[in-house]
Length: 375
Image 1 (tube, rainbow, N blue to C red):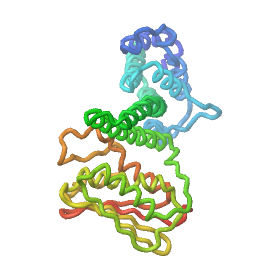
Image 2: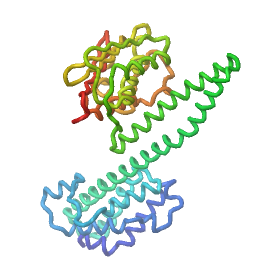
Image 3: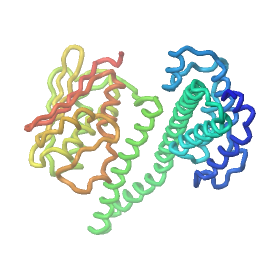
């Protein structure tokens, strides 16, 4: 008997085995009823039968085995895609999803081969069925990964939003305590709360910006005509107040006037300076140099210190990338590894360019921004 005919005839025994295996995938399957455990399995098998009965070229078969089969007409989601979506929402992980298909493939072929005895099974049917299952796996994993990514982004968005209220209350209370001027101990405690709150606020801002870029929204900018020298002077002054033990030098030459989002450019330079403070030599200054030409401004942030490893340098602007801090063994609470990534996204939103170079004597991050915010 041909495999397609066998699947249709023995659909129920196949589904029983699918259900039995799905029930072992704990803890997600712990409270699932029979119908949920069988979710879309029958439709997936019907799709495989249709595939087996459809004439295909060798090239079409090869593409399908690589997960690049042609999409079905007038179908927004295949059974495999819908199955993946529901499994993700039910709490299955991606390994359990793939295991279901491995078990389905094995049980169908084993039952069919036993049924074929003493006749040998059709080799072409085995190849075609494997290709159909490979296509279903590719469709499922693609949809599963997209659903997990969406859920993660929604969680990050809600986390960033919901934490702002309690944080603002903490900062307001700390500011009130500082204003009381009720002795040195209270003032020191209030200052610590304010500094810690500011770090938490920066982490939340990074988290929110990262979440926007993950959703494909990019960094939001509101460009206006500004004087970059004034904007960066304010940022550098604030950084000096936060890090009184570090020397931060600002030098501006050329025309500093242009159309940019001042708050975002402050964030950009702030992230680069904080990175230089964190990883550069502690006894040398951080240099911020701004140079204006006819059409662009160039911002260089430089620091002395160890060279950045070439492997790390190649992915320095990737999200969640953090180098080893030679000055602090326990620095994980101060950074999510998003500062340089967000800096690069701010540059991108202004249609500019950012690059990094590093050797044994100096590390420099160079930013080029067009004077107008037009692509």
